[in-house]
Image (cartoon, rainbow, N blue to C red):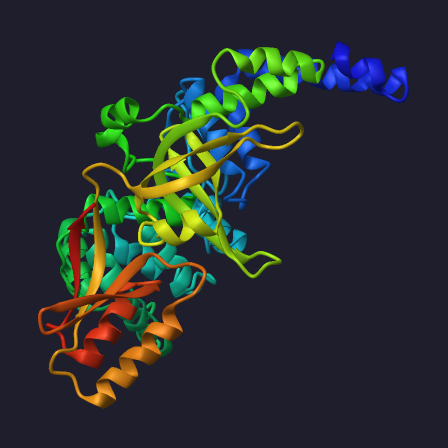
Length: 427
């Protein structure tokens, strides 16, 4: 407050800011959960901003609870000193559908099952994309079906409900309305067919959680590697935040240099490990390729800059959701975030990376042509897997693509179900 007052354009302006600063500091000190929930709500719908405030909640010892269809409100709320994720922060879920979902629950009681939810929101502007996002975010985790089962079944169930509504079945007494409450619930479930699937792997569940919420809540892919990462690296995001805090609180450049000299300096060689969350490729004025890579460890994210040499030597490892080790140098500049300039990017430790292996040994020319077209079509800025082609015993790299379950099925249709498979390879 005192530092700001020195250069504020007038003292009355400085006084107003001082009052606001004092009040917010008081609230954060004495009502931390309520203060942080309000702060998170001010960035509702902004997946880029929310993670850093979630990290601050963790630093304050405030537990973040997963979104739940029967407990979450539209916004972040406080439950016994913990913060419950709001449904409005789930990606692809608009404010109007969320308001309708919460209103229906408050007026007519909690949702008893997934099908009960689908029936009750059928005419409330809650579309399939919205429901899919809610499933991926794990809001139905307390119901009996696995997330994989719900993802495979929700569209059919919603179509059946819509069809029944159009035929005017609502409001009519049927065999499903007879009997006890338990019998009714059992019969209600039998109205619909679930395509049963075992639960997805923990890695896939965490990946969907990160995609929909912007952060990992129920776990972190790096948790099991924590000791190994600490042993093999020389810097973490926590250290980087300390450098930035020292830079922002120092009065002049000389003091900044003095503060950071003890541990980290501009240009110092460091080793950093984390999971890739995004990659932005671009070409320089000299037509050389480079990439801005966002890498996340257990404490936050940092931007890694990979110029042409580092990019070309490490491009097999530069795919989203891959765990990597970066050997590079620190870039500490006044008035900008600390970054790492990569010298080398490689897979981390015992991390097993998946590739898409396509066997074209017996493929026809027409199938090969379709395959080349598919690889070209699904390659872009946001690639998440390497693809390799097998001809006899010869296996050759064939670039990178963005792969989903639907795209994998498309590759299987082109070359044959058994000839396109995800294969784990050791780093």
